[in-house]
Amino acid sequence: MARVTIPTVAAGCLLAGTLMSADSAATHFRHQGNEQEYNLRLDQALSSYRQAVAADPEAPASHRAVAGTYLMRIAFRRGVVTGDDFLAADVKADSINVPKPPADLALGFRQSAEQALRLAEEQVQAHPESADAHFQLGSTIGLLASYSATVEGQVFAAFKYARRAYKANARALELDPQRKDAGLIVGAYQYIISNRSLPVRFLARMGGLGADKQTGIALIEAAARYPGENQTDAQMLLAMIYNKEQRYDEALKLLVDLQARYPDNRLLWLEAGATALRAGAFAEAKRHLDAGLAKLATAPPPHVFGEEALWHYKRGAALVGLKRDAEAATELKAALAAEGRHWVHARVHTELGKLADATGNRNGASQEYRLAVNLAKTANDAIGLSEAEDLLNTPYRR
Figure 1 (tube, rainbow, N blue to C red):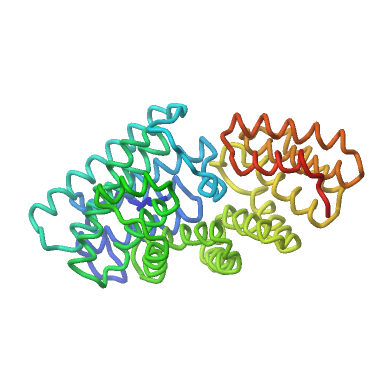
Figure 2 (cartoon, rainbow, N blue to C red):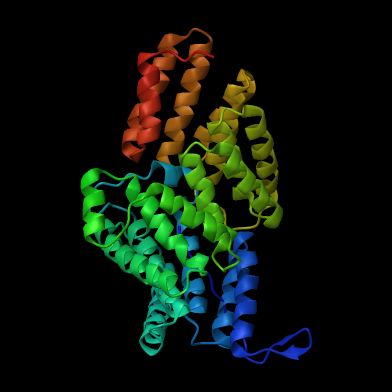
């Protein structure tokens, strides 16, 4: 979730023929980097963020943006970049086993994130009544929380970071209620915690974190309307939350708006297709997925690990829903043939089981569902596991 982005270049920059201050130059390069990053041009984004750092080395937002780009590159390597990961997240342990990130990317993240944290802490000490200083601190700690949980698998450590991020952003809102961008992290943690068990919610409240779902959503909606640097982050998170709440029309509207703004970000078409699938709008899902696959065919690197399998799985599922069985089987077999994550292959077997059930081949269907169950367990995919187990007991019916 919460990243914020950064760049590096020389200090004496000209914009519209006027010499820019260090602060305005850094802001310009960050905005440029944001456009590049959200269009999946990660190398260009990193260069722009580094230009922002060079323009104003004291701005924590620029160092944080650099760190966020390294986090995005790690996520691409692991294939953990879709709404499915958000929707399936239900971690109950204090830590989880995850592969180590590439050393160069981990070092790049740490150096920039720690510099951002140092600068943000200094700003709060120097200006304790500044809403922006608390916002910069909370956003940086929030990024560290995301890294700790998703990259290092340190769930308990991430919770400690999250508590600090929440308090810093809550303080920013208290100092300046118009800083709706500070509500993104506050709202995100309120929403996430509201979906956890009663003991977790109790411990969170003891630690100073709120746990009200509707308040959390309202704060994120306000951040999504506010023209801050994290507005796109807020809109993307809101689309995932609307999916979780089964508010699919609202999620699709957000995603279509983002497609118009970031036409090179094929993953927005993947998310729109996945959202339409969950809504049972199979023709609309196929339309988004077809357009996204065309973008994938000409997309420069980096690609997401297992991306080809994921696209074929989603398109195959849409074709199953449309009763275009021969085309669906071709897509699903292509998904199995491609390198992919276990949960993707598990759900492919579920879709193949549906095709077998549709022809009255219950034995073949049951075999596919059992394969899906085993892979879903390996992947800790509770959603896929539940569907496959249900279909083992009750045959698929159109």
